[in-house]
Length: 223
Length: 223
DNA sequence: CTGGATCCATGATGATACTG
DNA sequence: CAGTATCATCATGGATCCAG
Image (cartoon, rainbow over all chains, first blue to last red; front, top):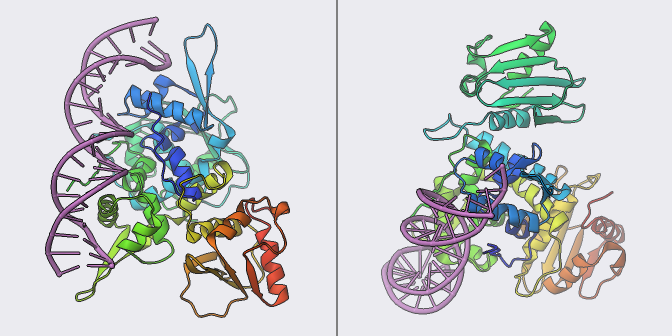
């Protein structure tokens, strides 16, 4: 099994970091593990276009690098992959690249590009994290008819995105589809309808107003 | 000419960013342009191990992506490459990866690893940028007998590293070699001698004391 | 000399099929 | 569900050469 450890041989910590996470697909694997543990096929699904061979190799490299831990329970079919603390610490670097992409590579979905609710919401989370912090915790549930449900919450310190498992009651519940949500996000903020087709909001009126207000910050984060 | 534009086909701004800067060597090229314009052979020298073919291809991709600008003056031999504003905005992402490497891939130089004063100082700059900001501007000149002279300065807002061209008078002048400076940096702060062999400091005593004090922050940045 | 281009070898990735 | 096996293609490295 080729361990693909091509080095740069520079005494430079950027080069060292890129030897660990600079291979093709690697940072996208970490991206999808930042929202919690995932199984092999979960990752195959989120990482549209990766081959099982490559995913398998990347996971093993990340395990060797101490970035990913593997949870294999005897007698259980599934294998769960999750980030170690060192892996979690890649978040700032990934968010840095994410923000650059948001500013310099923002274009509507191109033909053939896979669209996942999770990645749409990751962009929203990144922008919210750059706005003035709310004065209290907030919990939003976003339910995509075709792509699962997510919790986007401000925990008093940072905005967090997770696949929906928490039971904490939401301030706002959003019911939509990936298509409708994509249309909403790619429209310039001042051209977005107040009640977009295909997006239903439920909750206290003032909580819904706050949601609407915060969403006007996308994608520039100003305010 | 293969333009090496292999895509991920994800509607995700991280994937979009990595399509621009995720190829092998690309971020190292940007790293070396962050300190100012460079010529092809300057880059060849700093990027030990890259082949001219790959460097040439990377520079053209970065130019196509709007990250690098090329300055070809008629009647002049040299070609200068420099970052565009979009390229400069990669700095936070690069520093994020740099900090991760500093925390999780810090080891002494391995046999065969190229050591450049510029990259040693880039690590110092990254750490200084995470310490409590000084109460006034500071200018240090660091002169490496075997690898040029650099200016490391706090401009009242951030720490800046540049190849030495400014004429502003320094608070401290450091005269050393890459080997002596490497030995100094890889030693734990509490094991570093007060006057390391091969490192000469010149300047007002209180400025030298401040230099010494700030250097104890490397590599953890605490304080 | 700088700033590359060319040729060939090798390693990394992709496509597809298949298995415990 | 969680991968492996095989084969094809593409990207990269090494060496060499060349034009201004």
